[in-house]
Length: 157
Image (cartoon, rainbow, N blue to C red; front, side, top):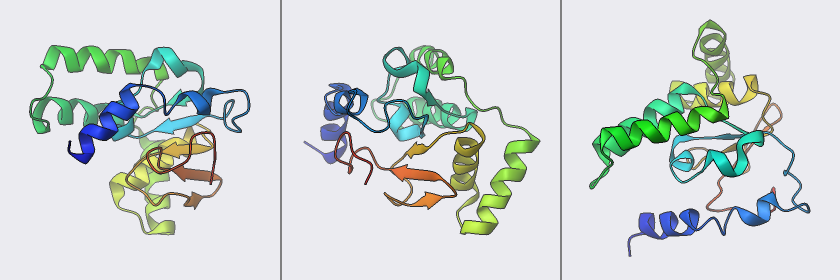
């Protein structure tokens, strides 16, 4: 089974998420920002209160699931998923996000796309950014990067 399918099976089972939602988990009440690859395996109904995304993440999810994956999702199914993910109150794209993204890009040397994700998470007041695209454990002025596929459930290290 390819690595991607193992990840999908692991995440879709939600067994990886359960310990992070437990009362003993340090980030149970923390705001989480979820990047595109993680949002594809997440459910707003399970963690609506503590999670957010940005419209860039929703656009990437739609494009990936309808055009890049083989087999992918039908456009209507992907649109239904995006409508569900809107429950996480996405950070809107606007001048504030663009300016903040440029600041992050200049300060930390990130790509413009990664900088926009970090900026959106910071604007949303998140403490943790769940993503595979940045270095696990990196910190951007109070925002900690967590790769949920590398981190031990319920830990922040």
